[in-house]
Image 1 (spheres, rainbow, N blue to C red):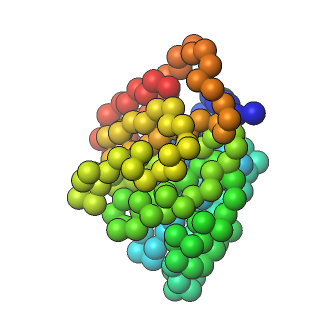
Image 2 (image 1 turned 120 degrees about the vertical axis):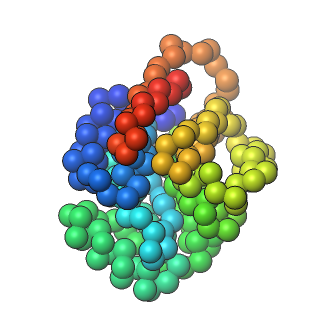
Length: 214
């Protein structure tokens, strides 16, 4: 088994996130990642968050898992962040499971991650990626704020287990930059190439349209 793309579910999650986030900070990123997480039918969606961070991405992921039937887990570093996160999500009408602890340790304790979102503006983002235990169906990994100085010299192959198969990776000029990688199913060969698909997203702030081939 491997992650299978469902365009109808992706569109529903995208639309619901547009309605829920409106002009909220980070809404363009939220809309995109919501469509990605839902479209890939992710069962375990994990993100990291710190007090003061934008909440739009979390709303998008909560909506995505509602459509995919998955579980949304947010890792926060302390109780203050936990309280702020829960309140912000409650005010938006959403909810998520919250795990408190050092991000690297908390993420390492989660098995079978299908979708992982980390923040490149945090110095430990590469360490979090390095310890993530990905699902056997494959996984989608996304680094937001990828235009920050912390990503200088960043390479997916330098932070991921050498046994993982990186099917493709892309940098997208959405928000402050998204660096993403699709990891193949464990034990899966390269196989025959299927028909190419295209994913279209629009930055709600600038009106720019991005078309992504996968």
